[in-house]
Image (cartoon, rainbow, N blue to C red):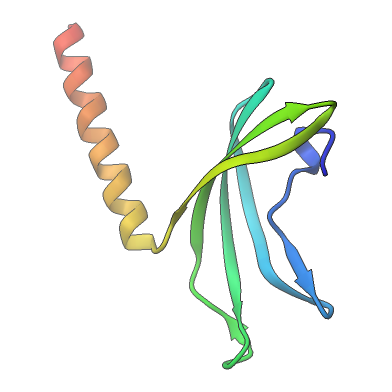
Length: 100
């Protein structure tokens, strides 16, 4: 378990191979409840190569000085990530135009 946000990773190894390889992370919120966006790849055992890039949003809760994962949402493809980004930008633009 991680005791600091910097120690939190989704990299996971089996038999010396990173079957989940973290490529990057962005801390979206900090505190007792922390939200992190990860960019990662899964290892394809049959092809012996990494699959295309995926993304995951994960929530962690600090309990007894350790961060524990509470929930996650995996974004399965770059296309899905683009659609989520576009919709969020649309909604934010709508809110901004109402507030003006």
